[in-house]
Image (cartoon, rainbow over the protein chains, first blue to last red):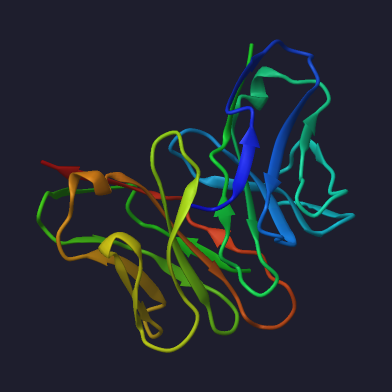
Length: 112
Length: 115
């Protein structure tokens, strides 16, 4: 079992709220990723990071932002949540010399 | 641009029968290929990968995959399906033509093993 954690696992909030989804890994991986996935559907890469102070937008445009101040921590923030943000958010990490990604359990977000 | 195709949205197989989940890819250079499995309400779990060497790759839970360069395929197989294998399976690829390249995931195939 990979050591990558996401909190909260489930979140229900109202429109307009600011939220931060937490992701931490204890494997010392330099690369980290955020994916958005509707239940049972394909993954969409929304953000990734090659290391500390490095962040890039992914293939799917997202209103969220990310930061990478520490190697182990890669939080995702939504400044003003909307119902269209309702989805599952998966965090993953991979090491320097491998592309095998290790995924967290996901955060299921519902915006009312 | 690299891409992955999983042509079947769903595969149904009877318990005890062999299963195949199909994947084809398009990439520059030699491919790195991966299979992941996702159980309900969980993140993805790594099953196996092909980097180089033997075309038949063995992975977790009795799964294996065969790399076929001429057909640009990397089908996932298991000799005898279990009901507990029912899940969503993702194929992924990245190229190896120099520089950093992201991993591209397929759209997923739902495997249903019928008791």
